[in-house]
Image (cartoon, rainbow, N blue to C red; front, side, top):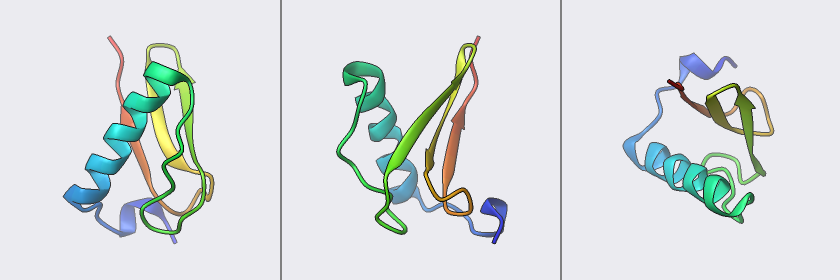
Length: 66
């Protein structure tokens, strides 16, 4: 399954958004993936970052930097 095949709900987006804030403030999060319950990770690339499930085919939310 490809991530783009399933549309992200507003609730899932809000969960990932708040999880991103946890990562940026505290460096970690206790929140689990809203779809499968696995861990969520933060991947940085320059000034942008992606919040995603450890299962690559599950869910991801990207933020662009400057």
